[in-house]
Image 1 (spheres, one colour):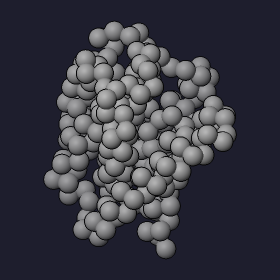
Image 2 (cartoon, rainbow, N blue to C red; image 1 turned 135 degrees about the vertical axis):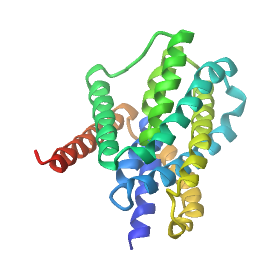
Image 3 (spheres, rainbow, N blue to C red; image 1 turned 90 degrees about the vertical axis):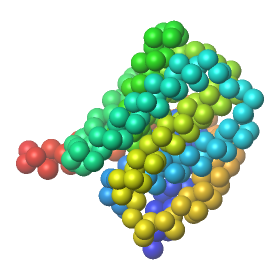
Image 4 (cartoon, rainbow, N blue to C red; image 1 turned 90 degrees about the horizontal axis):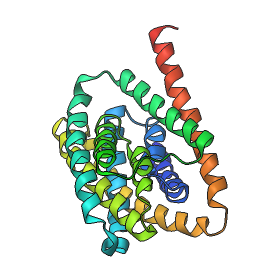
Length: 244
């Protein structure tokens, strides 16, 4: 029953991620932690993210912004490696605090200011790529911050989707070998991999169908509230862990 619930959570996260306008990993990682430990969740969430982005690139591959892919993508991949290498040396409870703080801060600021954006120049692209990549490697989710930086460049929809998917795919491909090399994924979970491929494709398809029927912004606000609550939950658990 637990594997089915895990895959159901992945399916739900992929649907929500498609509808809400930011990565499914932001939604799925906290859900995955109800079923597996943090390090295992990092790998499985990254795999779900890879499968979803491969699908997006297949549809929007002609819309890549190659300059932004370079100035944003390269620092993102490099800092992802640094973040992934640190996972083995940082206590999981501290990682959960970092994840909770990031999710809560992003959700709260997005609800208050509606749209987070940054100046559209090379310096901010480099900083945005580096910070979002480091977070992706260390706590498994940097897509929301990546989106905040990329929206500053006012890309066309097709170009935005393709560029964001290519950067996210590069980040995931960079951190996955480190996770596997560090023994984060036990053999018991190998059977989840092909199932996650099916879930990613099915969830994206269903999400696109549903989003045509309900207001996007209303659903996005609901998702942000849920992410805020999940982030606060992790922060609370860390306080309990410390004895407060």
